Image (cartoon, rainbow, N blue to C red; front, side):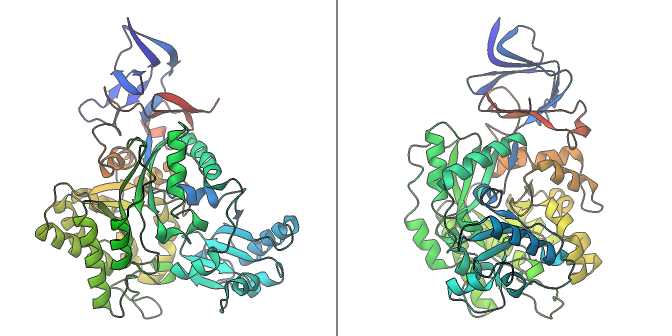
Length: 520
């Protein structure tokens, strides 16, 4: 009899391996999968009778600001994902009643395109309910902060209370660190992510450029927190990291060169299958709602946005972007580029194509992050290069009305191009971008398969959250599918039919061969 630590029987195992898509059971031993198939001839220290339920590989959320997400949740932050300025005022007023004298009030979640008042908020909307408490309310996207007069005064900033992109740091940097530090935040987040069946994720930007983003959730102090959890055996998900040399408002050659010359040493001695610094994050532009994405199409204001790299003109900013990407490419790292606007994406793809010609590198796997308005020609080039795109399908649902109003129905139909990307042979991974959206992958899969035009099949959608994430991580040989010798990262769905996994609860999550979360 073969002995397993954990044996699953009588179920429907969706392996995500085309060579053997389904099995009835699997055996786990020593952190890896020892057997996939009928359980005859196997016994287990612990046996799980699936009773027909579906087992899938652990979800790989390939763009998830986990620490930032934790810092934007209670008890660390006030929920202001509301439909009006009036509602936000009420929640701030209640927080002030509970707060100590002069205590900072942090909140997140408001959407400038979905406020009932049909206008942007101002500092005056908060001043009467919080005259003595500094208030900073992050919008849902992470690109805009609404502050009251007290917060602006402490920061030495003038204005009406709205700060965009890198300017947010003027007030965000003053917010005190949470009690218990980043370790406490990550412990709570990991437990929640495991409850969704998530066993791997990418932290898309940790470093000196992120100290003022997501209340410090993208700062340099987050990486050592992950390392400490890994060394203590407390890390219950695999973490791929993109370093972040520059802030959102101004990626620069100087910052990139300095970062590459003095890489963080926090991960010395940490198992690379637990935490790994894979590459570098670059902000190329912003987002359409704040008119900061670099578009070929005109905004209602008449502008087109711009790149957010250093430079006084478009040509200077493109040259700066080109050199940043060259430095990362030559250093042997993967680069993930935040590029949303049509013109920004073309500039990024042109630069990557030039690098591939002039400085060939085997299997670089660079990728465009978001890629909301990627053109067919840009996708074709990415496919030819073997590069990727990382999409957020829930954001398409959230923003489609706003962008339709900005650019018209034709542009709205072609944004977030999942179908076109897959057809062009682009490595297409999907993710939550939490805290911009929630980390529940089921909402993302539902959005992908429900969409007209750019919609994809259920099998393809599941692959964007499992196998594609593993490929983005250069890890497809050991995670992302359920087969002999692969990492024992998986979850049990409450569904008995694969089609129902998008609505069924997660019942059990296994990471590295051990149960890390159970619904019962």
